Amino acid sequence: MKTLFKNGNINTMEDINSKADSFIVDGNKFVYVGTIEGAMKFLSDQEYKVVDLEKKFVLPGFNDSHMHFVHYGETLSRVNLVGTKSISEIRERVKKGIYSRGKDDKSWLIGEGWNHDYFVDEKRFPNKSDLDDITGDVPTLIMRACFHIGVLNSAALDKIGLNKESAKKYGNLIELLPNGEPNGVIKEGFLDDLKAKISTLNLKSLKDVLLDAQDKALAQGLTTVQTDDLGYVSNYDYDMFFKALSDLDKEGKLHIRIGEQCLLQKPETINKFFEKGYKYGFGNNMYRVNCIKLLSDGSLGARTAALRCPYADDNTTKGIAAFTQKELNELVLVSHRNNCPVAIHAIGDRAIEMSLNAIENAQKQDPTHNPRHGIVHCQITDDELLDRFKELDVLAFVQPIFIDYDMNVVNDRVGGDLANSSYAWKTMIDKGIHVSFGTDCPVESFRTMPNIYSAVTRKNISGEEKKVYLSGETVSMYDAIKAYTVEGAYASGEENIKGSISEGKLADFITIDKDLFNLGNNVEILETRVLETYVDGKKVY
Image 1 (cartoon, rainbow, N blue to C red):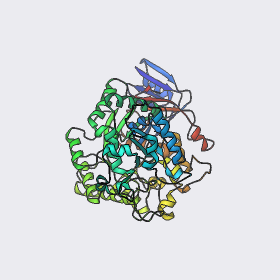
Image 2 (cartoon, one colour):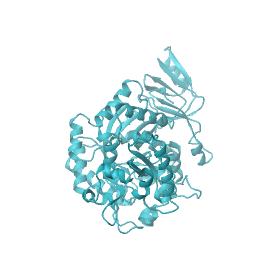
Image 3 (cartoon, rainbow, N blue to C red):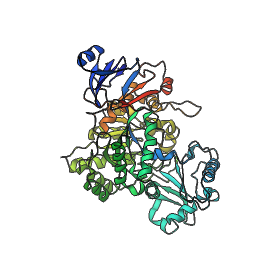
Image 4 (cartoon, rainbow, N blue to C red):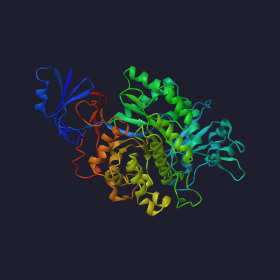
């Protein structure tokens, strides 16, 4: 039976017919969008149900274009180190985590969320010495807020066999003491592989994690998440991951659409993935393969983002590039030849340049395919790099909420000139680059309103001192919402089936307690609440 939704302040996010007061849902799609008069004419003598939207502000469902959904679900049961102001406070929280476990529990203890830039004592990474006396023989890993740096205690180092001899083959991914012994700090690819190795998720617990995360995401008006999860599943077990999604879908429990950005970092692994049938678009409208995810560098806060020049506040390093140009070219080309996009994590200008080079190489080597390649984060840029985004038609997956922290360190890290051409979302949009919004949750919360606020104000949310970072790069409310809806769908090649409230598209929409296009002031954005979330025309929150 059809359902008439009437009496709404509906913003369709279509260029034409952008406003409506009614729409009709049949099955899981919009079949009519427009006025109540037109809706009644459409329905004629048919039977239908009625939902009164009560003048609420209505938008298409939000689409977070890059996050880590499984990881977020796991954080709910880990030691929370977010907001710690010192190494002593980290120790106190880890100690509580140890005491809350059974006495004989020797499984891995994992904590996450610390950021040494906020420490009021020593602004340094913790190390094994800071953990050993409180953790004893419990293997422990604590991760920086960016998840590009981790710290192991001695019990963990022993458990994984990382010592003076074995550390040599990992180069700058392992920090060493003067005597050559690991000090517990691990970085980038080594940390990624360890996370997958120590994961204890099985099919049942993975489903539970997905359902826990789903409920909280729906409450934020997210009807789609594009997410990088395979590195958080034991040994990158993508068969189990997609079975979990399939099972939940068949059981009628999957209520949020999941587009998987598949983290696979070797040509042979990517080829095997495709050979097993996991092609681009594998799945259905509830879950699908969106792209191959590649990690080309680290994070700005940890000084592991790959820059072309040395860091302004540490001239001994230019960060860490995960691949040589030749290696990155090969990875992108393997995916390109299988008509599957890549989404490359690239924060520093060197990593972005290398990523654009690799995409351009693939386009020239194989012009018969034209997948929508993209770069995730795209933080440290200049005008020339942004012009190449447009020329190569490369997508930009950006996270506006990042400036809440990064505005405090970007000048120190890269210098004023480069800082003034970075996080340049308005410039990207003005150049015609396809820009979609995400949060990189749990690096940041996936709350939607703070993300929109960051984009339209360029102001920080946390901290007592209110600042503005590059006010000329503020985006309009319309462009912010478009980046969270229409462009999110475009980024996954699904613009024909979702992203706007349009006839023939999937009936994903939300109601909100304030009209975001008519607020008294920008602070009201942070006070705005999602009231209801609908997926396939059914209320799921």
